[in-house]
Amino acid sequence: MSERWYRDLERGLVTRFDSGLLALLAEVLLLDEDEAVTLYSYALGRPSGEALPQAGDGPDVRDLQDFADRHEPLPAYVTDGSWHVAGYNRTMAEWFPWVRGADASPLHWALTAPEAREQLLDWPWHARMYLGMLRFAMVQYGQDVRLLALLDDVLRDRFLERVWRERTCVLASRDGHRFRLRLPHVSPELIEVVPQVLIPARQQGLRLILATQPAPTTT
Image (cartoon, rainbow, N blue to C red; front, top):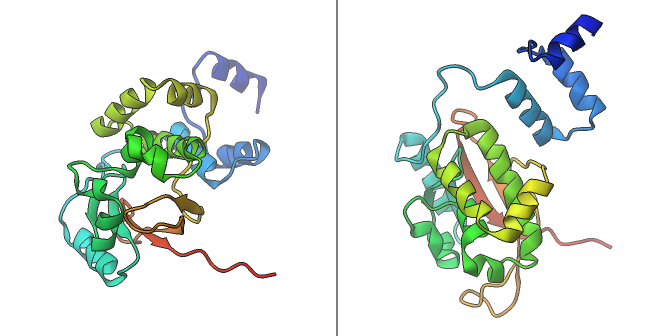
């Protein structure tokens, strides 16, 4: 880049970055895929006229709800783009009754519900991951009043507020992470699950999350 370009950047006059430059920045900064998406979102902004996805009862949600029901007894649920629950199957409601609440959200539950600190083993580590998901969601849907309200709640907690200020990681989802859960109302033993996050090609503002069993380890 020219010296004049850098002078303009320092004066705040550079308002657009082409995709080639962003790709080079992502490479030099060793950004992972989620971090690169965040960089592009900040630099290029949301496409004009794009509506925020909302949880509802449209045909796409009903199709995903049917898919979740067909995968009993695996816990499964559907969310919109800002992680608010649009549907769930019977097993999910038995394992996690919070999904039945109005405006239920796994982010809200994991970060603010007292029982989450008991049910998610090593909760501080999980909290860091969910804060990364909140940060990623706010990059895409920062005007969603529910996300803004959740951030206000998060910043009232001293531990979460410190992690939010100190750690700037972003995370699109918990896809493929291995969880250990303490759910005495389901099993006296610890439960291990691996969430699989599926995004339909025709409606990328929705997600289907299945809690699958981890693959057996080989020796």
